[in-house]
Length: 226
Ligand SMILES: Nc1ncnc2c1ncn2[C@@H]1O[C@H](COP(=O)(O)OP(=O)(O)OP(=O)(O)O)[C@@H](O)[C@H]1O
Ligand SMILES: [Mg+2]
Image (cartoon, rainbow, N blue to C red; front, side, top):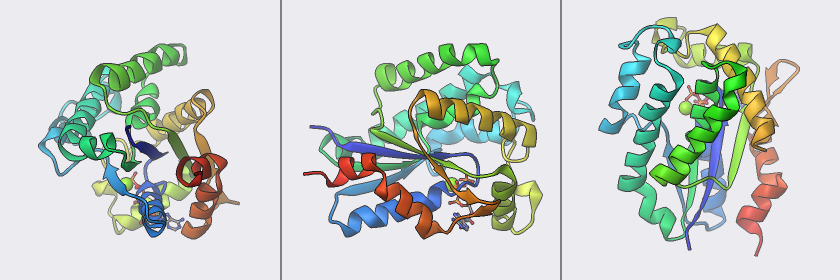
């Protein structure tokens, strides 16, 4: 009897860490056995290639590392953390809340490919990570949709106005826009639960967004149905 997994997905600065923590608190409060994980696992050596990539060591344009190579960097980082940190907890029935997951590859790497290649890539990706590497397939994916201008502003605020702190993904607006189109495609194709986090160009409150997630029938069924 393995556990359950919910993934919080979204573009850069969309509130994934914030909502992951709030969902964690919510489930804990209700007596659930829950663990929060976050990807990339920057504290682990397994993220070395991702760091090299995001620092621009393979080229400053995200496209300098092709979708399949970059996906591999992120996939093995997840595999390592599954083996070392949370696999046995999940295998024994625990609930995992993941801030980003395989689904982040779907969004960020599709954006490097022509649209006609997306289905082929997605098929490869999910087969590779969930079947061949054998890491868990999530039961639910929540996609936080935030207007690009709003998330850019939130990120700049977080870096206290220092634009140079942004990595090669975060600093590339065109890339972000393409990722956003890819994310819309994935949301529909893969039936992710999409949350509109902005209302009239302004971010909704953290509690408001959490409330909508918790009220989703899928969420209720997954965690609270007897
Ligand atoms: N609903 C909200 N209202 C106002 N500020 C928010 C909201 N959600 C998140 N923030 C703030 O926006 C910033 C980005 O949020 P957070 O770190 O949760 O996003 P993230 O998706 O994890 O970002 P990244 O992709 O860079 O890891 C943080 O400073 C956070 O406090
Ligand atoms: Mg984050």
